[in-house]
Length: 90
Image (cartoon, rainbow, N blue to C red; front, side, top):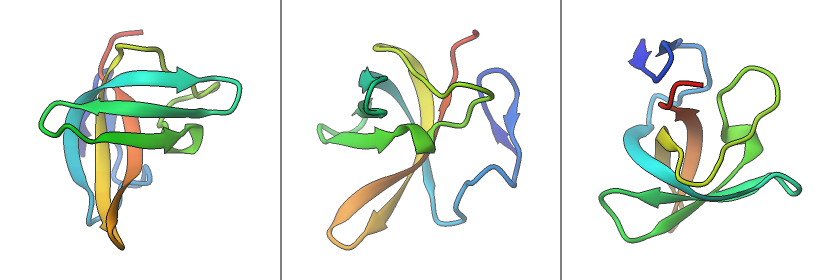
C-alpha cells in the first residue's frame, strides 16, 4: 500500500509498477473539459493530466493549489501522469 492523504492507495488502484511517485500541487484544472496541469516540486516542467488520472470517489475534480501525490512514467520522448491523489483533507 502507498501513503495517501486520507488513507492509502490500494495496490489495485491503477498504480503502474513502473510509476515514480512524486509530490506536487495542482497548477490549474478545468472542470468543463477535464484537463489540468501539475506544478512539480523538483522540475520546472508542467505536466498535463485528465480527470481519468484522478483517484477519488464520486465526481473527479481538483482545485488550484491543492496538494497531491502523483505517478509518472516515461513514454517515448515524454512523461505521462499515471495517477493523481489529493493529500489535503476533504
